[in-house]
Image 1 (cartoon, rainbow, N blue to C red):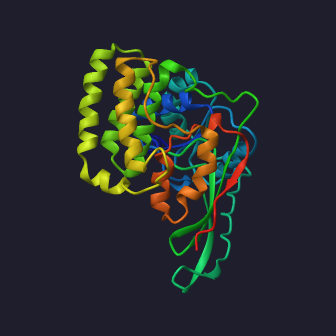
Image 2 (cartoon, one colour; image 1 turned 30 degrees about the vertical axis):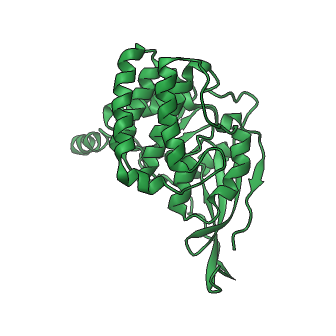
Length: 330
């Protein structure tokens, strides 16, 4: 038992966290990301890769049902950890390695069978070829994904032909963490970090997360602006990132994904220098983005669709509880 315990303790020094966040619980999510980044703990991409299911905020309705389904898919040993408020994050996560090392199965537990995948239909694509049609949901459990957003897509080949968007888990107490004027710069840094995470630039994602945390901590603005300008200059110089984002998700008034990223970078520097000032550019509301998003991703491949979603900075806590449908792309 001593050897087994030692092996377990060594195995769980860097547990993988699967993060499921309720709409409006950005502050809890940020606290989890900060803790994991400082400890070098990875955030899992799927239940199969996770040691713990971390529920950030209070999950309502269908989000609670998603958590139940996902929890049953985690391989043993695993821990389920509800964290309703930021103050619970540090003590809860600090204790996680010890809890995993001492984990014992509960009697009578049986693993849940994986859900069966629906069979594909067939339909003609734009070139007149017969290709499988698959219904693929994106979210609400995806890394760097808007909290509670579910995008149900219909794929033909690898291209989205139709999409429907809805926000799950809006409760009577849901409030936007970002609906405070002096958090505007931090919100943009959070959006930039999430977009870079989807694009695969992990080092710069963490750098922008750290800048976001410093902005939320009210660090002196002059020092923060200097570090931000250096990061922004490097992001703007990246030809690879520009090639990934250019032409994706073009929307009248906001441009494409690359344009929106560059606008965010400009806004952050401006807002840190002059907090509360007016910003140039168009910023659709959460409800407007929810309306536009299905049509914006139609015609894109799944990877590109995830970049498009990350580029719109959709705060689901501000959205109405409804679903929207995109046009068919034939």
